[in-house]
Structures are given as structure tokens and as C-alpha cells.
Length: 89
Image 1 (tube, rainbow, N blue to C red):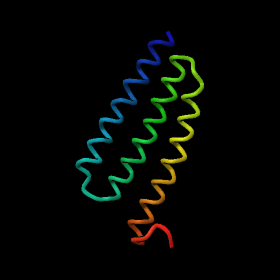
Image 2: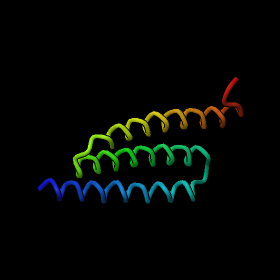
Image 3: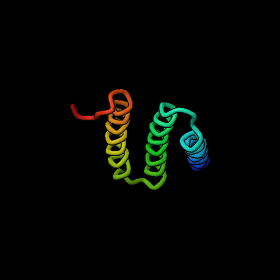
């Protein structure tokens, strides 16, 4: 039963990645693209966690934590760049 749930989660996160990739490519504004990139990071974290559960390895959870930290910092930096034109003051 858990196998079906894992495959369903893989399909949902994969579909979410495709939708957000479309928004990155066709987003009318830069803010839409930033939000889509942040959502892609969240979907990638979800895929890593589900993959870690499916094969039973804990290293993927640590990788998901690293991607979460880098994704947060990159989103904040890109938003600051759009607002001020400068990342580091």
C-alpha cells in the first residue's frame, strides 16, 4: 500500500514541477518567476524526501535540508535584487 502512495507522491511532485517550469518560462512578471522558482525548490525537496522514504536512506533527508536552506537564501537574494538593484549593501 505504501508503494502506491509513494508513486502517487512522485507523480504529484513531478506534475507540480512541470507546472512551475511553465510558469518560469511564460511568467508575465519577474515576481511570478521568483515564486515559481521557490515553488520548484519546494517540489524538489518533496521529491528528495519521497525518494529517501522509498529507498530507505537518510542521506536524502540531509540533502533536502541543504536544498531548503540554499533555496531560501537564493529567493531572498533575488527579491532584494529586484527591489533595490543590489544584494549586498
